[in-house]
Image (cartoon, rainbow, N blue to C red; front, side, top):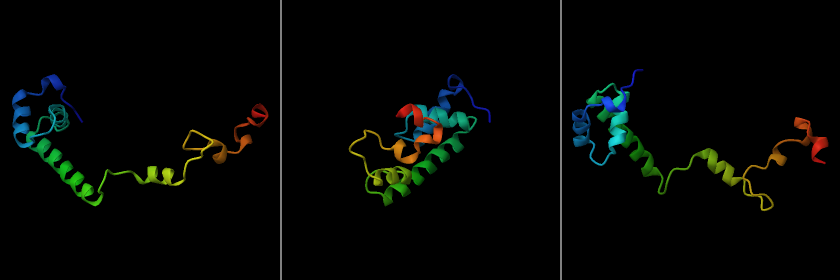
Length: 104
C-alpha cells in the first residue's frame, strides 16, 4: 500500500472531508486520506463507519470498555506483599531458568 506524505495532502481534500466529519481532528482526517490514497469518499466512509462501530459497542457498556484479558488479571486479585500484578514466583519454579543456586 502506498501512502501519501502529509505535506502532499491537498488542503482542498482536507476541507472537503472536514465538512462531513465535523468534530474530527485534522490529523485524523489527513491520516485517513493518506491511507486511502487521497480518496475523500473512502476516507469519509471509513471514519464514519468506525464511529458507528464504536457507538454500537459503547451502547452495551455504561462506562468505558475494558478488555477481557485485563479483567481476568484484575480478578486474580492483588498480593499485598508484592507491588506487581503478576507474581513471577508463583508462575515459574525456581529452577526453571537455573537460578535456584543464585537466589538462595
